[in-house]
Image 1 (cartoon, rainbow, N blue to C red):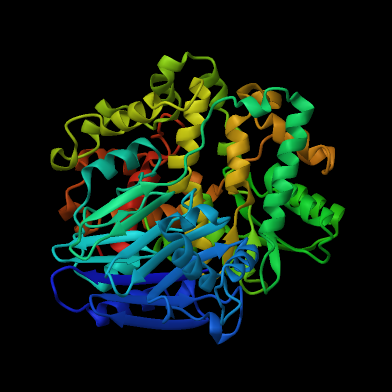
Image 2: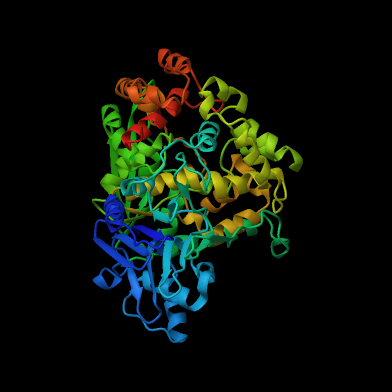
Length: 594
């Protein structure tokens, strides 16, 4: 787990090494254990290292293979690197380190751009062919590891975070109207390749991009499971599916224990993280470190689920850590969380993850986390509504249940200069829902949520907040084989029992019933949800700042209405509209974007 950066020139000039150094230094929190630079001809690479596998200097990056004439940088973890190393050794390759990075380079040498198809893991990769000048960029199947791009005439830069690209300089920081439309339609999610800035794009998940020396490139999407019922599972009953899911999750959890340092668990007390703890206990893990966070009550709403996390910790005998955050600390911690965001994110638990990660990183370098289960196994409350409509009405039903607001409402929120003339968010969803490979409306919904919406909301959130403290978060529910299995699972089994039915059935085999049969948890940060004093002050300060007025994004009469009644305006799904608007402006100001 690390941070990578680089620059490729297409105009005959040499890379701007000072810019690559600035980008690399901005990534220091992601990799506090080492720093490296490499340059040859038109390409320069930078890297910050977090030592997880092969703690020696032999695993340092950028890594070059003089015999193969390739060099590269890598962010993430290939969980099956030992098996691949054995396979590559049998094919005649020789290794000088015990790192998964070297396995990545040798795999590319042996199998070319299809190397990614052999990896179980999370990764963003940049590889340079020194003789041809070709550069290959790749991202893991579910987009767990980020890769941002900034292209200008004659030059491409890339980095593990958007702020690192800003540190390099020369980025067009004007707002992208399509991304702004998505941000206000999908509760701050912006789908690849867009970001909120016109000058920055992101490589889509499950994509390999081959960049030629003249700057031309070709993309290959190497993975997309079918959301249909498959012949090999035709004879499975409900109990068979439960066993298959439990076995696949057990394998996913086991894979994510690969490390040369201890691995802990972020334990909310919900079904998903509790399952991880239970399966690790089944694997014989002892003295497992678990971590929970809660928030002070506001507006009569509780902000912690310690009862359940404590129950799980006691049941499995974990070494449990509990963090309670008072409301006044939320406002102080907000700016640090926003600074860690590669893109603006409005989910309340972004602050929770940032604060928790700070404490966890003092104890361990690696944790497993339960993100992704709700999308993969249909755990959210809106999925039953999707299941009741025809395949042809999938896009319409999705917009009705998921969008924050319809396109027409944006004319009252945005200034005309940044308002697209058509419903670009609706068009995006209609195109995805119409694509073949999804059998029912719910299948199409889960495909969109798992491969698009989840990537740029909870997955990105976990990466940004944990890595800002040099903490690697691994997400077993996004093991690609588990996702493939879940995609083929009959929708009724996923919707059963109030959602995540097949996962709950698996949970009853290994967890206390009280944990499985509890009401679905929600992780509010009451100080944000109810706009407690210090948070409201920060919001008002940002929206009335001169740069906010000069930016000309939101209609001033609309902003005034929001500020006059901070808790009165809600999106269609119940989120605080003022928070959604203010967070974007806070993010822009925090990152020096004017």
